Image (cartoon, rainbow, N blue to C red):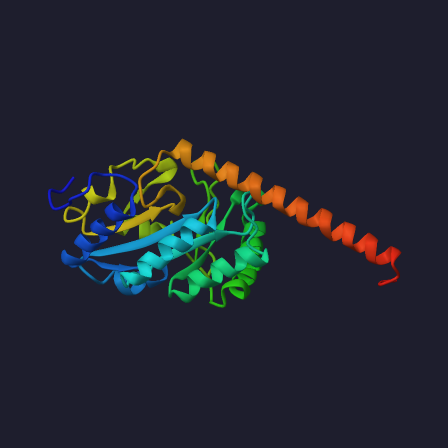
Length: 253
């Protein structure tokens, strides 16, 4: 780790922002994926993106903190997630809030749900349209979900969207990711001042005020999901009981 950093390499907001603050001092231009064509002309750049795989609450927290630091990044959302429903009113309001902080909203697509490239491109067009309505912003870029375990399908033929893993981006920038809370090439702090052009991918769920283990984070997520489901069932029971009561009393027909 560069000696300029006060905090140890960890998944705390303090370390995250001290790295980006240092990058600014080193004259890196930090921006979202959609600005690649403009930023690539600069000597030092960081394309900053976040894949929202599990929960939107951590994404909203990070988006707020980045906004305070005047940092604009890209947030990629799934419309085929098994852990959140982007079309739900509460969830969609969170996506809209993140968009209102000035961040780029992008589509996180899953190739496992398409039979071939043509079907995938149709899915991307459809889902991007829905995401645009949710966010109130045009979708410029896309990114594949679970690239290590999902079939690779070339989306660069799409003239509508810039893929975060477009070969031109991957060739011109060093790609680093915190997938599974594990920096394969070392913490992002090890690259600032050494590598001039970077694409940094983080997953907001791994980052907290105080660093926490991946297993502990997932246990909290599991508990929260169970609590939400229990609350939903309880509210449904009340609605049904109230409906039967009103029906018997002749208040509804």
